[in-house]
Image (cartoon, rainbow, N blue to C red; front, side, top):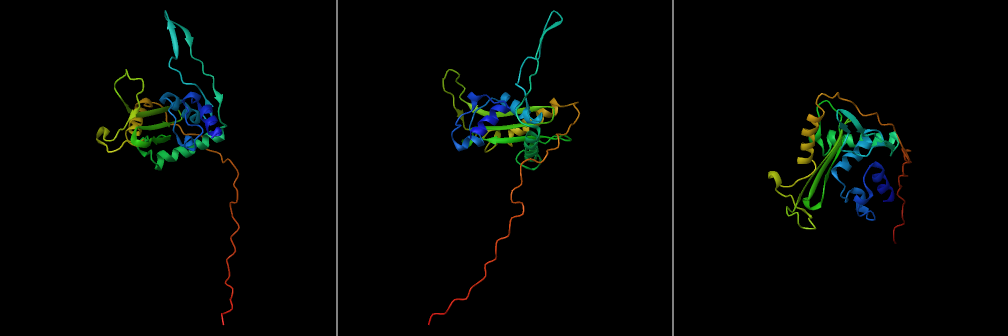
Length: 218
């Protein structure tokens, strides 16, 4: 679990957004990171392991001149072979898994759906080689004066019996990305290199048992 936590932080998630790190379920997603951080973390895989912090202001101009520009400071979170293999796996989610509604015509897409217990939130986070986007859907009590505003169930929202990552979140992601990438050339992800070591690829066949005769009782 420590390695899972470290990988999440390296990808770009804030340590204070990671909860339940001592429980086995942590590895499949019980934390509450922001959508912008999730988009940024998935972008780390889109860039073959180079992590960049998300930012909101690109440039500040004053009296016709630029007085400040954001400068990226990429860090290697993962080696390129590791990151590209993650992308290769996440591509299958969109190609023939739970994220097929996020497919973009003529473009390679990698991503992952997510749905919490109790139907209280649903996600789709995905990326192309140029752009990473996260869509998070949930309900909260409208009373902002309440100190604690837990997520509410979403059963029946939008006329759907249940809400899951493959429904509204993936559909919203698809429609947004179609517009955001309009005019951008279609690019392919880097080819994933084989990693790891194959162990026992051709296992030794087990010996076929042979029957033995037993003496009949007299």
